[in-house]
Length: 305
Figure 1 (cartoon, helix red, strand yellow):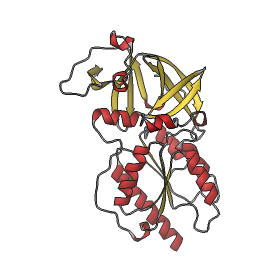
Figure 2 (cartoon, rainbow, N blue to C red):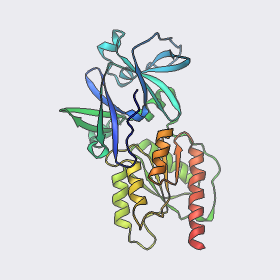
Figure 3 (cartoon, rainbow, N blue to C red):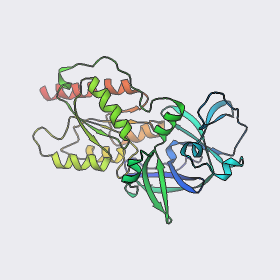
Figure 4 (spheres, rainbow, N blue to C red):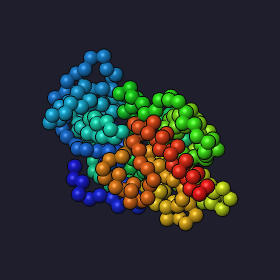
């Protein structure tokens, strides 16, 4: 794909690639897309889930090919007839092919154009994190991290139950968690609790987090001691949230850790540009715990000095 046009950091914008499964349009953040290719020879793999079409070879790399329509129960005629397209995606240090019926085009949007999924979809536990209306069509934004992790049998957040960090400053540390995935939020709460962080504030997107920060900015102790945020979120993304925090005289001292599946070289520069104190891939959960503990300890020492 042509990557000559890169979005500026902190503008709350994204580009989505629209594709179809049967007749339903879906969208994926272009930052996760590496290339789009026509169907190629597939090697069938025994004892794999139904959603795994097999393996494909792209140049010198062997990739797992996921039949997303089959996984969602909406496999279309293009795929069934051996046509369709393959979208090669990469996130969380994983790369795979995703078989879809057709690829439409790329749209440039703002995150505040993307709405959270309806309560009906939430009640169904549908793997959808957002919806957006484009040209009179409703585009669904799937939770690709959770879907691919489920199909491939790997955790969407790389965390293990290691020993608690145990420092005096973390016992009462107030950490704001910002992530649009309820599954990721629950995993993070569990692991942070295991590490000794029990005073947690959960927010479902950047706008929700900013509203909470605004409401509590004048409290004597401040709104929180650290913010742990995803990057991709409807309403307001993590880069824009970080930019607003670091440009606010009352809030800029709060450490912000961006914990995302999109820690790529391009996004690394964007995270630096908006002033993030740290950025960590969701596959490196234990590094996240150590970083959170270190930043809280550092801020505690600064306040005491």
